[in-house]
Length: 101
Image 1: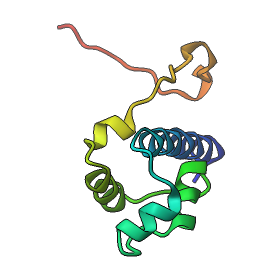
Image 2: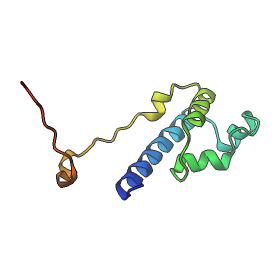
Image 3: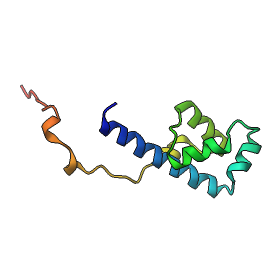
Image 4: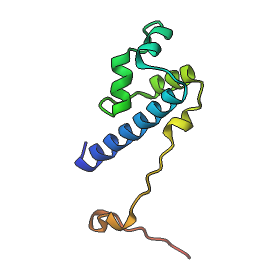
């Protein structure tokens, strides 16, 4: 994986983690409580690592955690980040040719 892709993956993990933490706190749940209620399906240390963006979460696991929190996955995947198009390296972007004939 290239450095830019690693950065994007890391940023996505941090954003998803931040959203997971916000949802958990809105539900007034501690990490330890999640572990207990889920009967150890979701370990406090692992959920904490997701929330800090230190660990990536699989799609299947994300869906299961969303089900546990009773939220739609799109809520967790929301991002307030905008893409700064001025920072795109245009030298390494393939040109698009449109044939209008």
